[in-house]
Length: 147
Image 1 (cartoon, one colour):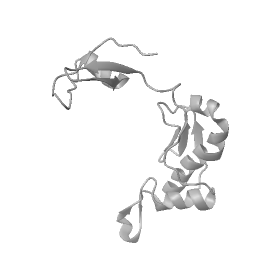
Image 2 (cartoon, rainbow, N blue to C red):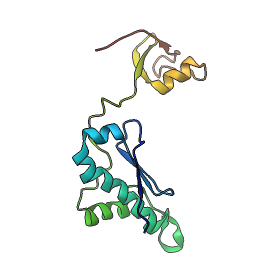
Image 3 (cartoon, rainbow, N blue to C red):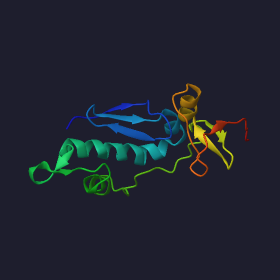
Image 4 (spheres, rainbow, N blue to C red):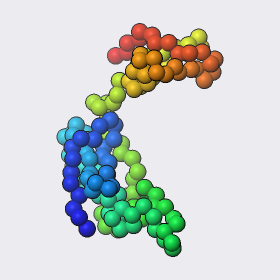
């Protein structure tokens, strides 16, 4: 087994991820600084378990390699519980308010809702139009600020 490298370039609200083929564990630098003990005790083990499953089983297992290894399947759960003595939690419960993506308010005749920065930018560039699920009207950006 080859030791994975650590990278501190994870973005968004994700605590960490495993680049399996590259053998790299990516950690979110801001969340890491705010939750150092949690990262040492859980996040790194979670991502390392993904890499170990990949190194042990690849993407397939079983007779004639027909069964796909699920990202948080029984192999991953087994490593989390037996090797790391940790519960096999799939998601974290960290405060991500510092790293959460901006949202923008949009409206139609029947309601107001928020779109992510990515969707908002697509609207601004004319690449996408989003429609209300209730009244089927195109959503229009509105100025609305919240504290």
